[in-house]
Length: 542
Image 1 (cartoon, rainbow, N blue to C red):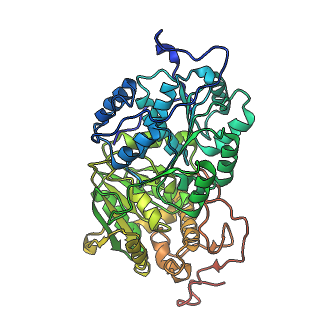
Image 2: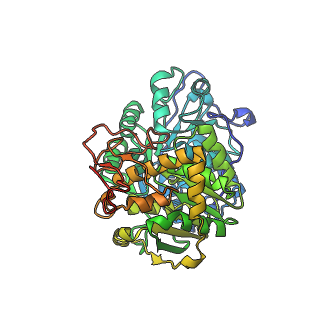
Image 3: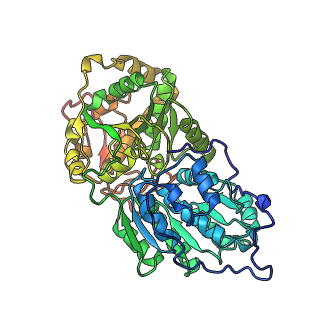
């Protein structure tokens, strides 16, 4: 696994073709059309080393791979690169951390190289990513791979300077890494954007692209792109929507590549310890604080169910001198980018995040993944723990914190081939800072406000959980839950806000509300209110 580039590039940075020498044959001046690449350009693989690609892959690309420190292909690379070099369409199922980024980048770069694309030929390859962070990650790998090539490449994504992107698209970008929304915007509204010569479309994390609400954009993009092209579709999970996308984007006989079908476990192989701890609601923060403090010299990621919960815990932990970083959808893009690279290049540190950071980001050497709030389903669990033990020899650990009432989730993990063992904690060694926490939240206006919003967001996220039979909001002991946020008396929560009463709210990068899109139809929902002194045995009123 390689570190992402630390420099912050302009959003649509283009490497000029000034390194081009006189031996490079140019495409005919009179026409912008590019000849199609014939099939059968590669020989058979003899082994799984990148050196075995010599003759099939250009010297420039092999130099780039060597500079990155890679010597042998992962399984998905070994199975995919040859047919992709031959021009096949591919539908690949590969879990997070399998090395799929290079599996599609190497053939994409070779395609542009062999067709001798020039800036005036416009865009030959488009790579679509679900989030800005993943787009930046892919772009960082592409930049290293292109080190010895002369073709232009760029990054197009929401939150960046649109006019600067449009200008550079007009100058000609041969390989584009993009998020769907911004790409469609340019395709529809940027006159100088030439994509009629497109040779290859890569859809990375296809399931995630559809999950975050880009289904309509994807249909429009595919409709606008040339039909005669190669398509590579990569997805960690195969859903009905992914199958529908495959039908409209791939040729009639795509090659299916799966690398996980016969595995006994579905999580990343290098995980040394995957386990859970049963923790009552009122002790959750105390457990988290103790665990983070004990492992502060390691590299950890902690997952929360809402942006407001990340924000509150970020403010609280830094206030009590436990330095942490945070990435969530309500931050500005520049802040998320800076934080991402800061954590990437740190030897140790704690990153608090929502699922916006969970999929596809290659953050090296993460020691622990802590799931503080429950994932929505086993697939989300797998994607979350995919941040650790990446690559061939990676090693890592994962901890899932469950309330006693949530143990039924383990059945679903078992069905999804996720093995978990119970971790034992000595509760006598858990830091008892509850009284200090309550005093701090009571006296500090800003932390009090932040804690209120986080508590409300936690309850709403819980109410929108897809596994209602396990994560039943009516079974929450609100006074105990509120203790973990520093409240002696639970704040009022109106679930009529952003409620869809049964489906998990759809998340989208930088989304509204508490990291969620506003539900289209608002049903009459429960209104929770703690009745503090009148009746101790009643937690809710409706």
